[in-house]
Image (cartoon, rainbow, N blue to C red; front, top):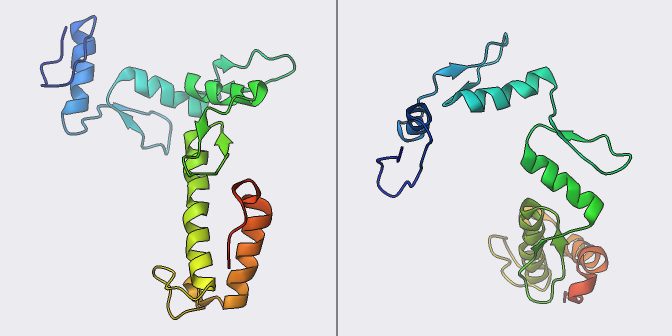
Length: 169
């Protein structure tokens, strides 16, 4: 059964699976509700509701197979992220020139990337530049002094940017 929505491409094995999928296109219809007292979760499909109910039951069907590790996950994707702890795999990399940061999750690289823009604001501000949305030269976001900006830049250079080269203040 093929979804009739242009550009969707969903193919379901049964009419029921196509109906369940159709709810994704129907403005958020979620007729399957959690029956746990005080929980207001609702889902578009029975499968999503079943996945949610693991939160209440404590069922963690996806188990780590590494010796001595008792980790269990609610979802397969969480187990895949966890397994990178054992393998050391860091498939996500910072795209800033000169930065060698790599991480096990894309969200970690995103959080890391903000340190580049913060350092840029700090170094520009501490050097007497405009510092983006900062006030007068030497005044950092939130009213920090030039001395505080210099201290933060020194900290970033020492711990967070050692591999990328020291910044200028």
